[in-house]
Image (cartoon, rainbow, N blue to C red; front, side, top):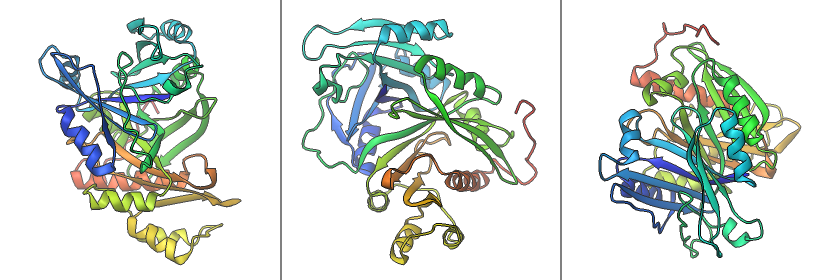
Length: 370
């Protein structure tokens, strides 16, 4: 199992194609599934494939989505080994079959695909390709009924893979959502986070596919004013909060993205003075200065200090405070998500809530169904 592509529903697909190309260095690719009611564009970077669709007419399914939610992720597509077995299992566990299994014409591009409902309005396109067709297993695609032709000249992308996708769900739903993904996709539970500040809190469970190709942290709020609850309120239900883009040089990637006008969450400089006091600190003065200048979060295990996890988070990319991006570098195969980084991210997002006026000192009531 692996991530094939992410499909965003937006108001103007061409604008967001250009946004990702300009700010993050993605390459535009050709699509062939534009309809009279919907316009679709796509971009790629390494194995990352993002698709953007916008409505041309009110009958477009994108128009329906945007009448119920702000712009954001509508579909996460997975490549699976046995699409029939997966869809049968999904239906047995309460998922709706939104598009039954279809297949392309026999040939080099032969594949099967279908679509199921997930949590909230999120859907999952499922794709099965012949295992012998290695060439086409690596090709980027948008919705499974269409092949996207990659730009082969783009050999050294800044971002090469999707590291993880984060899903926010309503308070009390986390156990059900975790069980659902375990049953259907055989994802396995890993880290558990309970993050709390003086103002708000969340609970998170990380799920990982057996091969490690899919990492899915799932969050639920544990206070009524949590940023997770704010997302749920503005998004009008569960949905994808952010996607992490993996890079081999996050300092360079951030510097380029800042130069191109991308805005990030701020990290106080006191964070870096505290960083030097942690067991296993091994950054050189020059690298710490570069990391602090770009406001990057850093985490490691004291027993493996060279396995660094470096992360930074953008401001919300759409008008409303819902979806954002994470840029991440894992040195020496650093695993996990870093509880220290998670806590720092929560505090940084809380600071943005205070700026928006959606979080005050007095708002600290716990949710009853924690």
